[in-house]
Length: 519
Image 1 (cartoon, rainbow, N blue to C red):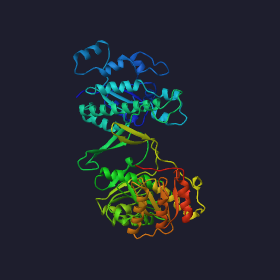
Image 2: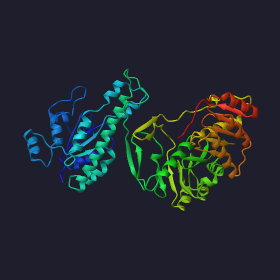
Image 3: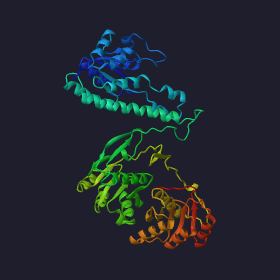
Image 4: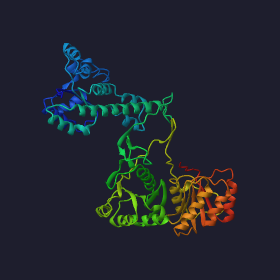
């Protein structure tokens, strides 16, 4: 192993740095550092030499040039197994640099601010940091490169175990991490700059889109057993199912994760205590209630057959009584923000049930993606919020306050049902859901059939359609089933015909002006 004698430290994020530097000092490791970092380390009592004093060349251009010097880069890049390299740096009076501790200017954080200007963004593009990072990672056989403060404690422990050195295995792992870090950094810059038009104003999408994801773990298989699969998390900021904590249960499958995400995205949109049950990517029961248990029981009653082996999501902490109710039928995955001690005990009796805790706070994703052969479809998320004031009543009959509440509820659910989608609701719960049909009439038939199978009456219900009714037959069908009010986007060439049918049938119909196709 190659002992660490000299470390070069230059960081923006100084979390944990003081303790790490003091640890390096215990192993008699010489520390070089740039202006701001050097000052910080000196204040913490760590022995440090400023880079400018070491190179004999002062920082210049307001700090733009401080580590771009051959005395540093030759010390980093010299191969330890090359006699000519080592002779060359000795002749130049250059010592090898064995450890690089670098994290880069906070470019992504800077451009995330709404008031960030192009000039500010450019000043947050790091030059010296990536150069050192890449040089050290390239020469990992002799140099360790540290980019993540969370690695400091375990690296100090290994340095102590190995008499002041890091194993080549560790240095290689650090190099892989460093290049991924550099790639993500350059991607953020490229995405930002190519999303600016010639006038410097933001465009909707970058000309060159580079995506960065971190692998969490391999999966047993994909949608089917013959497909290999892995689970990745967006490297950028944000909250969502990918940040879940698994409290118990078997390993998550590809389909478990996809269904849990569909359930979570739907349930977190309700202000009231709510429950969403998903099977094969579609909600098969959704309800609100005064308690989460009431919400669960009402959601489950929509389609008990489909709920068997499904994913159940809540937007409130789960208690013991609700957990016990959820455990009675077969359930694959349960998702909620929190689980109290009683709930955890109840689930512990069903050790195969996968129990996931997910933070309710959420940052909207910037883009949605759909992979196609040889390309990628990119869009902004379907996150259009709808208020009651946005609705336009187009029939003679006008909705009551109760109907308005149910129409808004049904509309929220329809957004998460695969198109074509028809959703019957009443009193803050679903009664019948028709999903993924080739025609809207077929979707209505399926929804009515589901309600009948569950023994639920559609009399006095409301209906949400994710897209417009192209003909009057769909409206006639939901009216025959018992619906009294309909919410739909409008926009058909035959809107007049559809509205006339609603008037003839005594239906309330409101237009949203917004479509919710979900493919």
